[in-house]
Every structure is written in C-alpha cells, then in structure tokens.
Image (cartoon, rainbow, N blue to C red; front, side, top):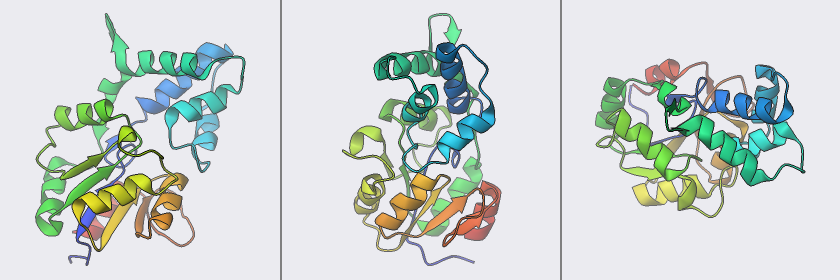
Length: 213
C-alpha cells in the first residue's frame, strides 16, 4: 500500500550501499596503520554510533585519538586505502547494493521522486551511481560539497527536500546523526538498524522496501 510520501530521500552508506568491506574496512586499516595494533570492529561501531561521527574521516581520526598526527595525514592514508592507486585496487570496488535496481525502479514508479543526501564526497557518490547504473533513478544527489554543514546538521536533507520540491518527503538513514538531522529538518525518518526511540525502525533495507511497497 502506497504511503503518503511525495519523495524518498536516501542516505547512501549502509542504506543504498553495503560499506562493511569498503568504508568500514578503510577506517580499520587506517587506524591500524597509525596505532600499530589490531582494531576490533566493536571499537569502530562505538565511534560510528556517536552523533557527529557521520563522516568516516572524522570517525577514523577520533579512533586514532592522537593530535600529534595531522588530520590531513590520516585522511590521505584513508583515501589511498579506500580509492586505491597505481596497482592497488581500492576498497570502493567492494561495495554492493543493499536495495536492488528493480526495487528502486518500483519505488520510483510509486513515489515519483527519489533523492540522495549523503556525507560522501561528490566524486565517490557519483562513482557508485555510475557503477550500478542508477543515474536515471535519482532526481537529486546531495553530497558533502553541496552544503556548508554536514549531518547531524539538517542542511543536506533540507537541500534535497528543496531541490525535489517535496512537501511530504521521508528520509531513510542508518545512523544517530541521520536521526538528529532528519528531526532538525522536520522530516520523518525510516531508520535501518537497532531500535531507537521515536522513529520507525527496520532491521534491513528489505524490510524498508516491503513497508514502502
């Protein structure tokens, strides 16, 4: 049964795209490079569950927790691991879709407008869209460079809403920062992940699709 939404706005990482073997692994490898020890996945998850840790460069730097290491140096190592270079294949190529193109086509047919509001740099967001041939599906892609402030500020979601000319849109996200940003933007959120107070929660994107279709 169609819900009353006039637009669906998606986060990218953990919502449209599985980043467990890309961004999450890049956080792990970068932190291990600087800390010279093994990093447990639970350490990364604890950082990522904090409001304000939507940006994986910030999360990595927080995990390293050493102000003697310049932020840019940590970011450059992260990007080299994530994007690759020379003979080295980047972890970005490990990413897979969490929602099928057919399901996205059906959601587009039902709701008309689809958008993305992500903290990814524009080039990295576009790489995913091009790789999975999703260009015709999304009317708006708001990336890191498109607003002055990132989530948990509402700016990316508000820009997506404005560009889509949406009056009754919904945001689909998976982080505490997404919840705070959606609330500040005064837009409902469909949350993918553990139970959170005051929002509609789902355990997977398949559940979200079934709810919307």
